[in-house]
Length: 365
Ligand SMILES: [Zn+2]
Ligand SMILES: [Zn+2]
Image (tube, rainbow, N blue to C red; front, side, top):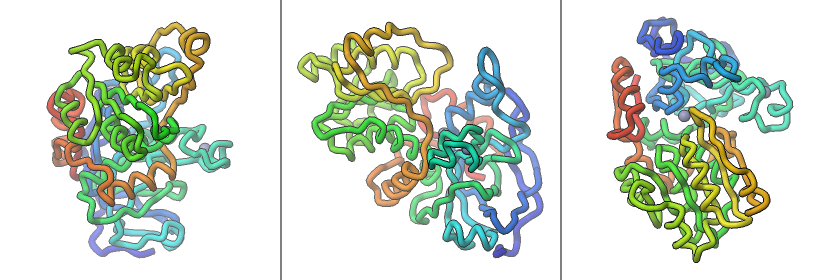
């Protein structure tokens, strides 16, 4: 075990105790063993999921057909980055890390036992323990210190990336994973709907694939401005025009080759099915708060579409996210709009949930 000298016994953390019950409180700094890593958290982004969980959404707390998933009390946050302050000898060997390095753990803590973990598809682990949602097993990064456990997938991160930008590695990894599902070809017209933090990463990664055109759709003009700045070819605001017609006009009436839904709204699905060309590809990433009804005959009988789902990311997405961010191939300086000290979490959560002024809000413990 190697450790720095002055690690305190207690720390401040934002812990969830239930729906609408987050508390800024003093708790013990996690103890680690020879297979584990302790990091001092440098930054932790607030995910839409964090604000939805705080507001009591059924996907976290159960309801309808959904079982409860969150285990409280749990330190919130899965968009963290930290500096190693203590590391067990086995962990140091396994992750090729030492005290003083910057490191990230992937958001999922794989069980290592289920068929998905065994086949390397651990991001779909049957148990879905995600940092920030299952107390003890997978506490999160909204705290001064955090433990990366024996089953965590840990990556070293270059230190020249500003901490609040490194907190975007997790959302960027999801973006990489989703875009890879789309199998973009150089002659493709690609539409990404929903210019949240992840959508704004997706357009940049899609551009790196050098397709014919990348189109961004959102109803927020400010976010479309950022999309333009980040190099998207065309922006469409469905509040100002018929988005489906606009895409048909840009593609000789055929429709786009690839549609990536990064909105959590039913309209994102419906317009996508309408604007994809025959034999085109639709990738669904959104998390919805209500059901979507569509006529499925458009998928088979009328268009013979290919539909993919996308959920978080594994090693592939993280490695590319770290490299593209470190090399400046993907920029997040216009995406990370606000920084707050951890104690002001409530104001930060409200600003993230509102989303009119903010895109990504990051907490600094
Ligand atoms: Zn997230
Ligand atoms: Zn598993």
